[in-house]
Length: 361
Ligand code: SAH
Image (tube, rainbow, N blue to C red; front, side, top):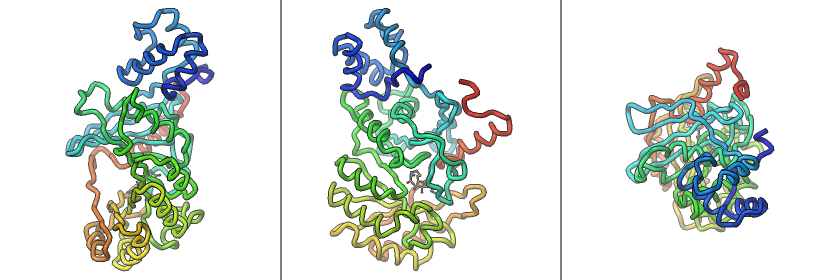
């Protein structure tokens, strides 16, 4: 039944206004409701006391408030990282990680239930793709992680690096970005947002046209087509030449350098020779600017057989070749904060118990 109603948390102010006007109510009501939802975080029409009981009932008829529930919350003992496993309204689960850095609090959010991209080292790949997340389901990952926290502890940055490929859910991700940054609502600057992609070339070019101030990050992981295609099937469709061309195009259009992610995998992509090839390919991508590579020792995922390579050594190789390289600090190691691991465990447990999504709804 909910499906016939409109998902109110996915609507921008102007869209909500059009809906409210269509109900015969004045536009200022839409502003009140938007503020209640996105600023006051009141997720129950009956608690919006400035509205009449009759209007509250009409709202209930027309809209639903899509509230994922927190199914599990894990607090790290080694740092302030918190991991949330959200249960969506259809019973599926996604993960969100809240990370505390000296410059603020960043949330790593999921954009899809599962993923189609099939990267060999990734915990989500073997589970396949289930569906796209709605804008409200992305938004609520942030609101849920902010709940009950005072202003200084609220999320100030977002990385779209959780489960899913954000550019494979393009329209909903764009709507989410408009919602989270709109001044009537959460008003989070897109300068503090990083969107990570495995390299969907046409979508990178489309994103360049949007002229958003976010940081685009490309998961590269190898600089030779043979190696990258073996690790990341997407490379067979969009090989490195096309991908790096799209990165140059993005830079030309937006003036913003694309950053690169590189999971260092022992014996696969971590040799001095691999670093040399990587540097050679990246140097011409952003004329006049040094390329930047974030290195992360691969997180060994059960069943993949990959082991972490020596990130600090690979960093030295790259620096010698004129590439900026940083080794990403890993947070929340004790709570499976790496993407996809908690959901995978949960699905394995549920399967053992004979539970499937949708059984409780
Ligand atoms: N689909 C997007 C975003 C989600 S994955 C993308 O591919 O960029 C977020 C990042 O985690 C990507 O850089 C991805 O390649 C990386 N990643 C996935 N599994 C990993 C693992 N086991 N160890 C290290 N990084 C991993």
